[in-house]
Length: 254
Image (cartoon, rainbow, N blue to C red; front, side, top):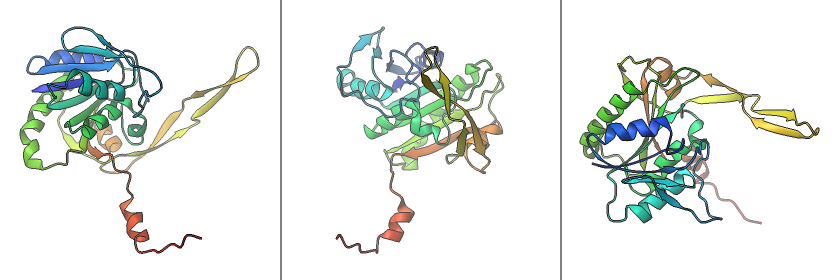
């Protein structure tokens, strides 16, 4: 297959380098990723300045913009004649679960891929202070991609749907199970931290520790058990329940 690989950690991040290396064994890889870390950039586009693509080797490009910029530019400027069969965003250093997906540049790249009609997968490895154990994740990624492409036509999944996969940090042990999940729920405590600089002026850090709600069948609860979480997502902000309630209401404009 022709696989488009991108991320939000930057083109030199270990996760994307190892993923590219592994997938090149079996596939043609087209890589375009930000030239620096763009975590939490969400689905932002750079509209107020020109963008540059810097060649970093055969079918390898660095973009001086966001993950979404990288996908959009590569698709329309680099791969016009050779459209990819699949887009993979990652492997991200850290989780993208629950409300994280609204901030995540990793997920945003997969969103852009789905908008462009490319089957897309966002892959993240849940990490803390411990070492990244990429081998198990890389092996599972390669196997899942092969299986996913094989069965995808029979699943009849809408092109706008993409997959958000979160891998537990397995310490080298093989994953035993995966589960299809919905997004979890978490709340941050002390999300804005105020401090004072040497001149007496206040400044702020956005930080804090999340409190997750234990809900069965969610990405957080599943990965906590050491199970790989796969969440099918799509960009659709319609509230079907509210629309159903409001649909029969007639509102007079005064």
